[in-house]
Length: 133
Image (tube, rainbow, N blue to C red; front, side, top):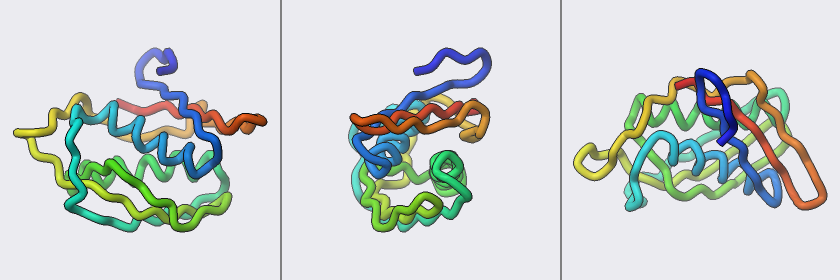
């Protein structure tokens, strides 16, 4: 985690952009939910179009937050089907959360553009995103 005064900051790593986006989703769910046994009862294709990679990362997380809030969907596995600098299409596998089995840890309102960035290095990608809780 990245220290931040009012919200939660996360730093994510990945060998490539695809792995970075998948790891960002896993980081989000680790903040939202204590659930070690998510099953794959639901499959959903999520498509995000954005203006650049940083915006794509934030928009991806916000789409997952929306699905968690609106439909109580939490995903544990992701297959990236299409990825460009401005477009992501992923097949997401998970289930509807069940309060008897899944403890909601905190309410995440949104991923923000504040301080969001992606850094490319020879060993992969690192990103930082601030989550509004």
